[in-house]
Image 1 (tube, one colour):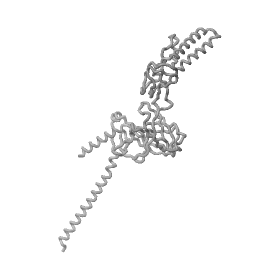
Image 2 (cartoon, helix red, strand yellow; image 1 turned 45 degrees about the vertical axis):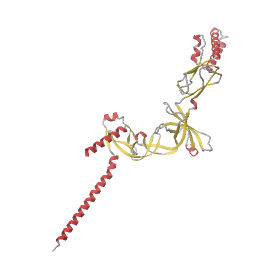
Image 3 (tube, helix red, strand yellow; image 1 turned 120 degrees about the vertical axis):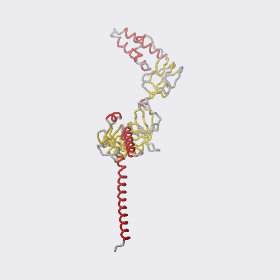
Image 4 (cartoon, helix red, strand yellow; image 1 turned 135 degrees about the vertical axis):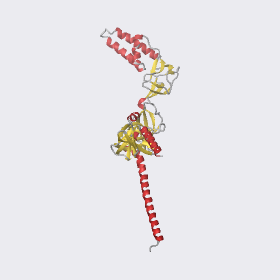
Length: 376
């Protein structure tokens, strides 16, 4: 006869085994869900309406191979373009009657900076008027007309050399009288960086009056390391960064690599030309330059504008259907020329958003919050 207590024990043991197996199965399912969730979040997607697409100014670009050249970094400082500097000096002795510009003023091309009374200028104008009358009187005399015309041209040239404009000289004829003051004009648009005279000052020939600089195109003087010289050539692209504008890049071109090596620092001077149409960059600023060197490699890349920072992770929005974007995390590498190397997360030919990412992020966050409230 079977022992009843033994049968009950076996039944309890079997039940415990079944329960344990069920728990293990549930844990495996839960673990599988936990592993899937991050991937699901990374591929969270959203479909925009046609109006939202237009309002968000959505633009796209394809991930494509890009030639990343070797990069050379170098410190330096901004300075005025020496080809756009002017030192205005007195072209004739005289007295400063009026000063119309001071240091720091921005002036236009041809703007009057000062007016000078000069007896020499008055005498030159008188000579020109006399030569003009003689040339007009002898214009019908074939023997005398050429010489009279040559004297007039010479008198005109002397007036131009002391600073009178062609229009001012041409105006002397109708007026039949000399101009009382000689105007000192800016040869180009720029900034007055030095004004050396005051009204009432007497100036001699060659005296310093003004220094003028055109800040619309600046030079960056760089210190290039000896070991980087072999990979640098004039014409290479350059990206400049300053402390004044964190995160902003100013692009230019390497004009030259110097011929003299500093024996102490083991560096040569490099010169980069950078456009500065808004005048935000200032002479004297320190810069950090990244130059395109020789050699390099080709790698998959997307425009910088496509890559967004999301809590320390780099993400892009990939176009997966008609007005449909998926949020995807990528691994980035080198940055150059407005392009970002993609080490992982994208394949060539995939299309990413390059503008309107703020709208995509906000709409995706809004949808995620609505899902959370719906499930709660």
